[in-house]
Structure formats: C-alpha cells, structure tokens
Length: 171
Image (spheres, one colour):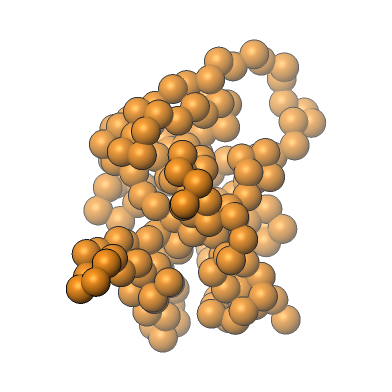
C-alpha cells in the first residue's frame, strides 16, 4: 500500500523530476532568468510546466517553473514560479512516500483524474507562511495538491473528494 507524507529531505533536484530526453528533438534551449521574491532563478525553457486550468484563484496563469528556492534554509521546499507573472509564485513541498498523511486510494484517484501514471507523478502541496506569535507558522494544503506529470510536463491542481484532509496541515 502506497502511503505519502510531507518530504523530510531536500526537494528533488530539477533533473530528478524531468522526463527522459528519449524521443525529444535535440534543441539547445537557453536558460531563462526570472526574478523572484527569493532572488533570481534560472530555469530551462524546455522544462516549463503547463498547469492545465491554472491554479485555484489564478485560472489565466498556466506556465510555471518548478525550481529549488535559492535559500539554503528552505532546501526542503520548492518554488512554483509563474513564467507569465514574476510576482506570482508559490512555495510548495513535495510529498514523500512513507508517513501516511494521504491515503493511497486518494493518490491513485488524482493520478487517474489527471491522466498521470503514478510513477510519473510528483505531488506537491502549496505552503502558506503566516506571522504568528513568536515567529512564523507554516501550513500545507493537503486537500488541494498539485499533481505534476514529470513525463509530459503538465500539472493540475486537484481537490480530494475525501474531505478529511485539512487545508492547513501544520509543518
């Protein structure tokens, strides 16, 4: 039985989630430099993700890069950065397959809904950072993960039909 949990280790490097280059034409794509709220990042133009239907609240924004956050203190997280609007980005955390926060049947359901093979799926949760007494509070949205098909470079934000998943899971 496949179980999932928030990743405890650093986020996968971009090369870990990119599809194999077999069958893809040899095109020398330049790196794109994008200014983000965390500083500049470089992404390969041929590794952009098409978020079909956009993210909740941002239906018109579809082209995103998934990249490490340029801050060592945040190496467990990734940045889902809009290519169309440099001011639009989301901190995300990948799910890891070992602690059981999400049931295997629900993972299978969102993969089937998006047409993504489970072995090609990178499931990330959108993180919210809020000021709290004595510091900051970080939560992840378990109810509406983003499913990235690493082979086809398409993604979709899904809402689990199982409403037991919190919108604000403490990290």
